[in-house]
Amino acid sequence: MEQNYLPLFRKYRPQSFKDIVGQESLVKALTNAIELNRIANAYLFCGPRGTGKTSSARILAKSLNCEHGPTIEPCQKCASCIDITNAQGLDVIEIDAASNRGIQDAKELINQVQYAPIHGKYKIFIIDEVHMLSNDAFNALLKTFEEPPKNVIFILATTEPHKVLETIVSRCQRFDLRRITTQDIVKRLREISDLENIKITQEALFTIAKNVSGGLRDSLALLDQVSILGVKEEITKDLIEELLGKINFDTLLNLLKEIYNQNTQTALMCVDEIYSKGNEPRNLAENFIEFLRNVILVLNSDNLENIKNFSSLIDDDIEKIKALNLNKDKIFKILNTIIEYYKEIKIATNPYLWMELAAIGASRLDLTLNQAQNIKPVTQNPNIAAINLQAPIEKAKPIEKPINNESEIKQEPIQNSKPIKETPIENQKATNVQSKDSAEIWMDIISLIPSMPARAFYKGVAKLVKIENETITLGFLNENTLVQAKSASKMPQLENAIKALGTNYKIEFSRIDENTKIIEIKPSYNRSVIQNQTIKQTQTTQQNPIKEAQTNMQEEKEQMTENEKKQYSHKVQEMIEQFNGRIID
Image 1: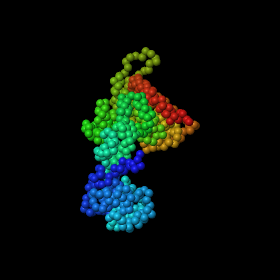
Image 2: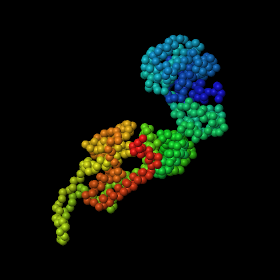
Image 3: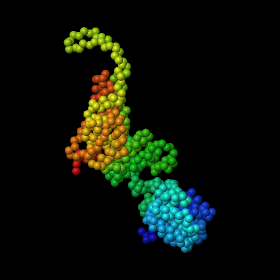
Image 4: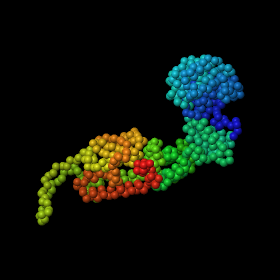
């Protein structure tokens, strides 16, 4: 490396208004002010990082202090222009507010304002990250900002204008710099790549531009990073994604295909392969969410240019997605499932476990939906007659057959009976709950929790200690899981599930020790409340068919439980065992 080597973002820093990229409104306003000689005493430049705030401040200072100025095209050759370019001038002073934020620093600044410029026409103070100044420093500068000497100009720059005092903002001309568009960044990167003889594909430049949040400086820094690789061979999109920590398109597409086709085992193998290559579970989840967003965009738009502008996909990627003939609704459901689990991945102590659970949950969506659709009232079964609980029982005819056996019970004619009143649903729920043991009640509550991560948490991590005196006591192995159980994302769902059951149980949490007795939850308890209620409502008149239906549903549920166990990889099973406290260090 040469001694005088400059990074690209410094070497190609804008030096005049015509070099500023993507800030047309700012350039127009400042050039008009210079031409009309209507220079304000204070300016405030706001905007995201890398959009040209400090560069615009320097160009404005250079245009005002140039020997041929004020001019919109500084000469770049006079002493004043050279000093400003090298940040060495005595008339243009740059101050970092982050390291000069106190009241004493403000007083020193006020003292410097009193001195006249040495070479240029103006003494200009550029205060970067001005929001870092303390309130005392802001208040000390109020009067100076409002009525500075005629040859003094303040130019403030900040990424967080909401932290600047309103009294300061009201004394400045404020300009908001917007994020630079992808097209403008790609165009500028191509110009610089050609000047520097960097071999890079257009797709790679587009990938850089899409991942810098509208900051040209960040894009130049990334181009500088990969420039040494583009001397002998061309830089591709895959290389840029690798440097950015992105998982490549084909890998994510393969994972989606396995999840979409409900190949749970293969999907888990894909997750493990991605994890083995050094990608963290949170990074995988974020990349997969972004990928699914792009897939949805492709499925909902036929305009190729719009898809390319609003995503990081290229033509080949778009064609691969369209060739799969994916269902839009199912992709939305997969996206929602991954997002739900992503909330847990961000805070979990074992994010890899939750990432695999996310893959399992997303790949079993169709199965879950089909099971939910199959849970219908038993009276809808063609083998069982429909029952009208509200209809009165007709008058029964007397039995004419004589009783030949003493064991037979003498039956008398049934008189006109009153209509049977239907018990309110709330009372039915309460009656059902009272007839169950603690384990059954707890599993019924869990089955009513809508969120899959919350349901999995209370089912696998929480331990049922007891249910008595209208109170459910849950135990946890450590403080971390106890905090998660009380979190705003889980606790309300548990409370709503209890209310949906028709009960008023209170929840208590406790720590588990070796003396704590835990109620064992058997697989046979893992059934739906809807199934139980339906069975109980029809049990009085359809005994044999109901028992048969109940037995069938129970066998299906137990079979599903066994299948769920088979879905987990050996690694995940070990993690679940350890997380549930069955293996204690």
